[in-house]
Amino acid sequence: MTPNYVKLVQDTVLPRIALCRQTFAATRAGDPAAAVRDAMARAACTDKVKPGMSIAITAGSRGIADFPELLTAIVAEVRARGADPFVVPSMGSHGGATAEGQTALLAKLGVTEAVIGCPIRSSMETDEIGVLDNGMSVRMDRHANAADGIILFNRIKPHTSFRAPNESGLAKMLSIGLGKQSGAENCHARGIDNVGIYVALMARMKLERCKVLFGIGTIENAYDELARVEVLDSDGLLEAEAPLLQEAMANMPRLPVGPLDQPTASGTLDVLVVDEIGKEFSGTGMDPNITHRFSSPKMQVHLHIERLVALGLSPRSNGNGNGAARADVITAQIEENFDREAVYANCLTSQVLMQAKLPMVMPCARSAIQTVVKTCGAEDITKPRLLRIPNTLKLEYLYASEAMLPELRDRPGFEIIGELEEMQFEDGRLVNPWPDAH
Image (cartoon, rainbow, N blue to C red; front, side, top):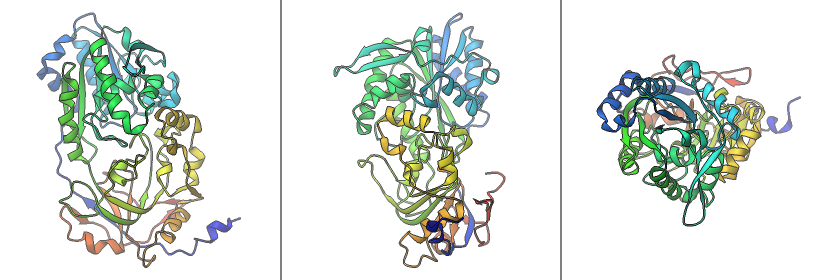
């Protein structure tokens, strides 16, 4: 039986949409293994790896471009220098804040012992490295702390909730990722707006007191592809990482809203349809650097999206539905796969409880999209300015509604490549296809 609330929206007319393509300036690194070899060969600090040393290599929870290939190459380079590498899941409270959950999350990302060629030593046990002036304990993964050396490996990119000289990257991997649940909780204890401060303080203490040899950071282009690999010595690591963050910011893709001469999308949009949310797309499920729906009121918002609907939760998220809260409407698929154990552990650690909330739930994609169109406040809701994207990581291809095409037709770097068509649904899912290359 159809619920009455669904009947209230089922007569809402959905706009026709056309497939479009954005072109971004982009550098591509090519073969990831070669990029690692070349970067490590260029950096004198890699000579710190000596024969017989046990070397801990960090692995996070993000869907980094070429993640298994890069990690496998790092392991091979360490072993080629005569050392004994192992990988440590370094993801704070992710994976449900359990050792087994973190290993399983790596496996979902294609990282297993069989793939990378070395042991994965997963534990939530930590050692206290020291105490900050305010009494806050600084924690370090016990396996990593017992190793003869530590190599930090992570993607460098803007954080979703704060601005600082060091955001997501090597410093955060050291302070939060290797801090496991307890260390991550401490780093977030003064609220999300102060995380950047404690990332730096904790990272500096660990660099002084732990056996960090160097870091390997990757930068991606706007197509979610590997742009380059950089090796940063532990001496001066935070300072060396800062300009790489600025480069990563400049590489970010954007929604085609507002003037191109602005550093980010700006203005207004009636409706944004996001096919999938998930941890491999962003730590918050949907990257607020794209949607401008931040958890902190201190973050600058340049784009106002009146209504946002999320249609699905990616299988690789293992039920971690972070990001659902930033939507106005979600589908039953997200609600049914929403694992409170994973989400709540993450939220309690980050202290961003908003992430645990669920918005209005509609039974299928059609009714969910009808709901946001009906309530978007457009002067004529039969002609909403609507965009559809697969997720917030890949923005090369998107669908635009008929009402948006006039403003997009002459936009530099933008191409309308498909004819206008009706939204198509099968088994409750929106199925207008994405290109095979997507």
